[in-house]
Image (cartoon, rainbow, N blue to C red):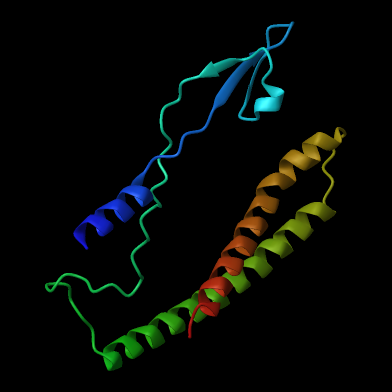
Length: 152
């Protein structure tokens, strides 16, 4: 029985060998192939055995942690989650107000045309910080909405 087991293990653990050919064309460009029909006039490379051992499986997400790892009971976690949701909702409301103010500032600045801005690039340069501020608040709102959507 042991001999049969050793033979089977030897068969599964054996390495796979592939013939790899290096081909050089008339312009000096190298090409590699493992297809023998395409390898006429090419040099056979010695690449050794190819490992066929499968990659290790990743650990599961629910793997037990170390014994000293702190644990939180369900009630405390639920309270923390509620606090977190409330804080995120407050931050979202604040960001929405700041976005509205930034959009108003941008609109006000777009309506103004200074006499020194005959070149339109100067107008764009003046408006850029206002546009960046609007974009920042829009990105923050998007991130907060994603975070709130992750709640169960």
